[in-house]
Image 1 (tube, rainbow, N blue to C red):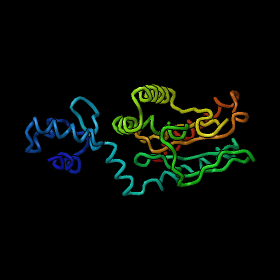
Image 2: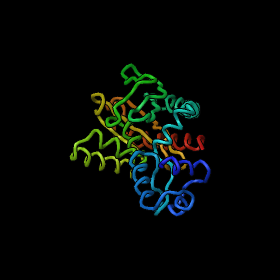
Image 3: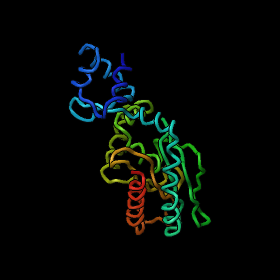
Image 4: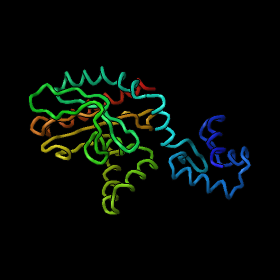
Length: 234
């Protein structure tokens, strides 16, 4: 049964090769491949090399909910968010994926009268806005595909996959008027081990303030700040 496969990751280091799984379970080879395929589709395993498997995105999500690990991310991020807020004067947001949603973990208001406000605990559309798309772009492939397949038509899916690939290539997400009219959003990923997405660090403000002259600087500052938070979470 599938629980025998999952139990191996509790008693052995990860990842595990298919031959190791075969040797330590009583599951026939043909049945083992079917069970592994089911675990991959469910997000309980992921492929990390030829014949190599590790716990999947759903296991990470379950573990994170159990451990309430968002608290350590918020604690690490807030001082750096405050520094960005003081220097740049715009709204700074920390977001994370929770199942199939994006949640605002922390928010610092802009110093300006015209601003785009979020609330801690607010749930966002995972397919719209820089602070959501940065998370979707860096999710484990199986998790990402599960979300895209559940919400997109074939043509929308292709467009979204191209956009997410571009975000990963650039290392940031930039949107204009996608959630609020005339609002610029820029977001960078907070990664663990350079791979697993922990959260997104974002700036939001009106396009007349975050203009072309400032965008490159803001991208640089966000990526630098997100990398600092990543190091603190190692």
